[in-house]
Image (cartoon, rainbow, N blue to C red; front, side):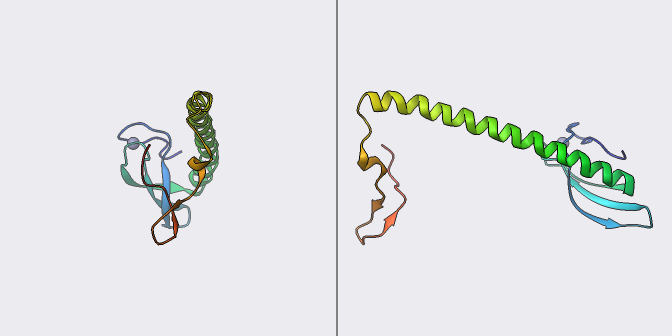
Length: 113
Ligand SMILES: [Zn+2]
């Protein structure tokens, strides 16, 4: 493939932003590196574009898996705090009630406890 890694940080997660045809078998692609924020432009053949598309699907799966791991870790950390708080009777129904402003409108609670 024409360009498979970021020239600045060697990340393999280059993201195509837009492309512009240049001739019958070449496409000029604007790419962005999500790790070092470098923007670059590179010519790709149609075959390179197909390979880039295939790799993007793989990267997307990798990113979704990392996101799901992160959500799981975050929820586990919240549960680790919630269990002792419930055991110490520090949480009641009022903790889940929407905050009512003096005008009577429910808004997001702004005060930390
Ligand atoms: Zn980079």
